[in-house]
Length: 478
Image (cartoon, rainbow, N blue to C red):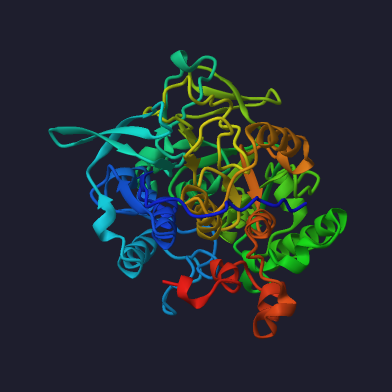
């Protein structure tokens, strides 16, 4: 259901806004703030922009073979598509090059402060925010009219505490230190976790290891990157989103199973390989895009699916179903802890990987503070970040007003009760539902009947950030 946001009567004076992080979300925020006449200062602790996809800093958490898990057709900002020569799923270096191109395209370089770590942000009595940041030997505190946190989730690796870990004779490591399969040659490896890194790492390691076990949630479905010979996100259309959820489940399940068959993999062989294939539920199941090689390696017996890890012995890993395997390596692809060391715990509660925010963006009781890019997206991240950033920029510029804190709190509770919020991934949102909801709220939803030349693409094509610029005057484009 779409909501409306009351418009403020007039824009406020020119304002300075601190943006924490220069990754995908931070760059989107900086551009949108500039569009509204605001003055962003973008703090980035790495040597260059890009965040996780940048060259240095957070990029040290990535493995060299990493690719985007959504296609280049969706994984782009408005007004700047990926080069035609780029593959459908760009590599780490290609995404990095694209983000540096975007910095130039949007004129963001003068607003970046790289090699700078934000140590604390605090509200003051006048509704402004003090930001203390350190660059080299220099620490400086500045006052801003607003703060946009774009630091994301992927900073502090989360390593589970397994019962018996102190007795385990093998190695336990996190995927943030993974650099390639060579170190696992001839070993018996248990890979824990089936996010994007888990399936990539398990596939790579299976080429060199003696045996690979992939410990996964029973809710997991693997989605091949290509379905019907097109990137899978071509299925995440507005027309599909209008179908009843039961019909969506049946159609998507049929298409995914068809992609399995085209990869030469049968359901019977996957189940024999330990993949449970649970009920197909777009709201509650976990869907992980994967290279078809993962499915083929499971069907061939090179990777064996297992339940979650229950404990460790001196030379064994014990799983939730009571089974156990001999292993000498536990490689945890278990994600990252949501932490913001620059925010006092008294300001915001982080619980089970989530923060209660109005539309996943605004804390109801902290004016002029916003989060962009904190959601977990079932689809491409840049269009979502850009839509969030456009809303934030209009609020901070005084162009739009937010509902009352009480109304925002009530909306948060309604959203938490919705079946879509029952997904095991914290703060999970769907494409195109979530950015379309934001577009309705901002009055920029691209109605196909208003844009005849784009109607087929809007209804049947993959989501694009350009879709949400069709309702804007051309002067708003950069």
